[in-house]
Image (cartoon, rainbow, N blue to C red; front, side):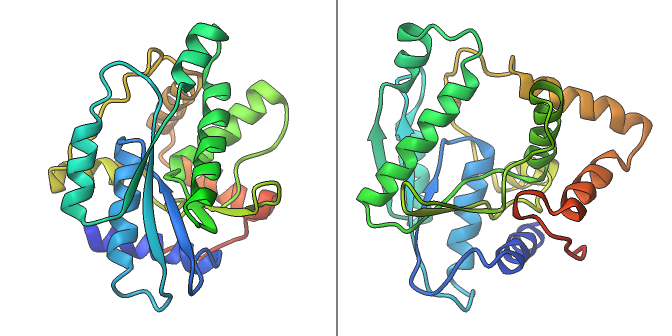
Length: 241
């Protein structure tokens, strides 16, 4: 299972030239299954990729009740990875100060900003996030339905205001493969403690795609292929693994 995951991550890194010699990469780790898989895979790839690069895991403490930071620190120790915990008040700002009815967008923007700033303070030139193949598709549908535009995030993005490059090495990994890997390895994700988890528009997109896939198993492949063929946001066609 691990080798199949590593092959897909390695291919994404190669296809989009995500990692170069001398990179110092900040990996955003929330404690969820996706980010835990990302740091696990990148740590493994450090051993045999031709590029030499450093890793540091960054976890934002958002102020959510019930977030077990100690379990995450134990995971870092087992993996033997450098890490940094950044204390923030993002949850308080989003839910108490701003009292957002649709908090996910603001929360995501604030988290990304905090990760980029922390990454720069730690001497990193790149930041890696754990978005996977399903996230790519869901983001496309969210943009179509709620913004009226054809858009999804890019595999690689240079953020000139922060002078940092954002990479997403798991874009070829399906969510179900990540879930299976986590279960097989006995890795226990750390609950975020977010008040609206499972009640978001993205969750609605997951359910919509699931329902469509029951009728047509090719739905996800077709949507992902359309994104690649369109060339939007830096995407380009890639051969299947």
